[in-house]
Image 1 (cartoon, rainbow, N blue to C red):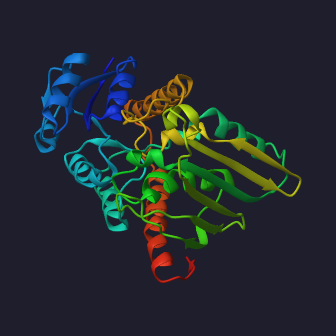
Image 2 (image 1 turned 120 degrees about the vertical axis):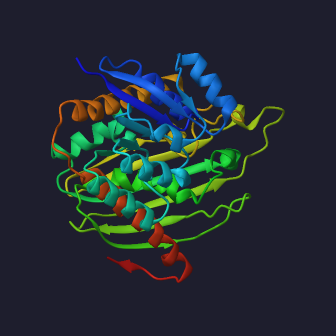
Length: 340
């Protein structure tokens, strides 16, 4: 039986997770990997027995023996490998956010259509058990008609190193907006307003609150705060206090569901860059995340192998979220709400 040949661009810890997951799939073979950090490239290639390795993405994408490319670079580096891979006739899997500006996101979508290639946008949080339980409860009518969604997050400033690349709404709010969008069964945003834009110590902008209304009338609020570490009396901050806290609450006309999402926030930002943290989430969380990733990759590979019809629902939603994230800046800078 034919095997799907896969290449991976970006070998941070999440890229390595993609590699591990692919190697557990029977009809898949990772034939090439790429990273501009040649030491990291060599280490990962040797560890997993990958003989074909590239420090330049263009060289890898020029090869004809690759069917699918996982793009696991940082968010600001999604555009170039995504477009080049599609133009070279390869299918792609890309993490949320799809891009960090609307024009780039639209161009990736355009190239997928023009080249008749699959593009799979990773939405890992949807597959985790806590969110699945809420989704099923809503579908089963346990709270009646869904009316409002509230997502709260509080993080210690000790976690600043995990948010170092770009405005945190790309690393955090897009996955959370995706959860709200999915739970509400909405088609689009109708209205939004954003508040606050406190810069963190590294100059990266932050958003304190995001209010929204979907086309189906479901409204909601996402709030985000940073806390100053308290005195530790000889202990490290990671030993003496909780690094994250958070919740998801769904209000219906017949009841309410709330789940604690504190630990799940270790999966947002740069969760696999944990050298400065001594208690970065449980092994159970990481194991469940790996299982969800494996399932997601299996489904994507099966679609290609079975030559299923190509549809672009996930990229349509991913484009919408990038557009909303970009609009957040205008809402803050000019102090107005936005109607779509």
